[in-house]
Image 1 (cartoon, rainbow, N blue to C red):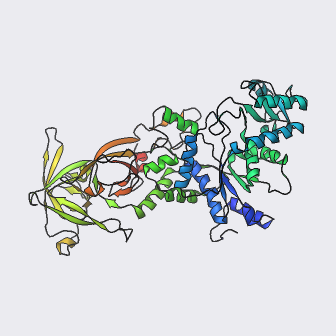
Image 2 (image 1 turned 180 degrees about the horizontal axis):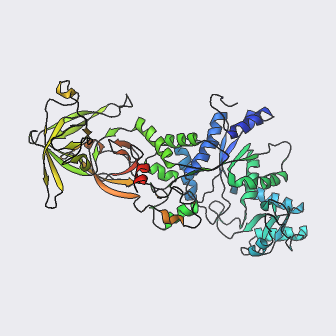
Image 3 (image 1 turned 45 degrees about the vertical axis):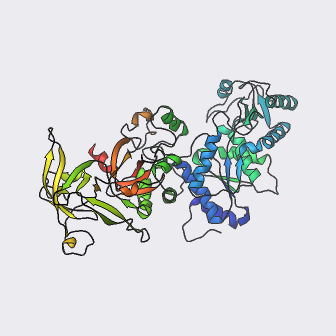
Length: 561
């Protein structure tokens, strides 16, 4: 039984009721059934967390079943990517299954339908079948081939299987009810001819089952107790049950389909077709581009598995769709990274500072705490010298009282270091400030215990020693779409809302402790945000991605625009 400490969602209430009304704990089994025709995205992550989370809660097995019934769009590359993403999220499946594992069984069951007079081969074009479908308020009309003899149907279906027909010449349809108020029950297609090689079965088959014929039957074969789908499959439930009615035996558990609402994420799209368009049109660099809502893109950007799982847990499971602001996902990224990411110093928009009373050629190594949130994180040494970089926006020649960073005649503390005072600045011929001359208080060193070291000044700046700095490529990512719901405009194409400034590349100057940083490692660049080492990094040529800023600035930017 479930742990009752946490309130149950409506899916868990269904399971609890089933356990009270005849199901045993041993009968519980869940599944995650992706189609391997693209990369998993944040929407899939919620479904993964739901199914595998139920498995953990009830100590029940969870199958990973690939819905590989369409060889035109499916590839082994996507199978491998899906497995990698699920493992990265921290979940382990019980059985790795494929709809293609059941092709022979599904074919045999289809033969049984034909023999029972419940399926027939239709030789009309797709346009002719569509014209006979009717409307939600008007019944459809029967196909002229609906009453073919069982013998003729068996012969045609076998010849379809043997590859004797071109695509579109024949399909196998269930014989149900052309007057059903549920349009999906109006003699749905069960099989079509596809003369395409399959990523697992190669050319063994040239007919392939439709989703509605393979889905419930796969659940039945695997004895999945609860088949959880998103709301668009609610109309399919009646057909799901009809298919099961044709083969369920009293000795075996009958799977139960139940539906939950999608959680759409703002400022993005999750349609695989639209994500593919972004890739093909060169808007992004690939499925794992850090701006993409794919799990591989989020991983590359620096999100942690824990942050995505916490996000999924926060938004929960509901019966109605809604739009979740992406800032909530970013919040969970900040919350987890704050606990685990080492603090380092980097300057992305450098302005040179010369401390005129610091010894020429002098240097010292200052103690710097790695992560104040983690007592076990320890400390490191950071080099300090006469010439430093600070952020250009941290200095103003003249500023009002609310500007607590460096200004002429004003003092600030350098993080882990000394208090400095700006005395003068140098400009180029265009009037741009290129250097600031400062003095420092030698007795004000952080942690030295002197009275001067305890002196309070309002501003603290991060910095990097020029002589010791390493250069790195820094990729500053923003939201991929300017509109919170780019899919929500019937009269406008989603591509109109692409944020053309979603990527900015700059050269950053980093403290030398980062020289040996490895791909995937995450850091907080103090006062700038959370960053991780990108896959494109090579020895001597580091590339960092900004995962999220330290604070959510998006709302303020939108208000100003």
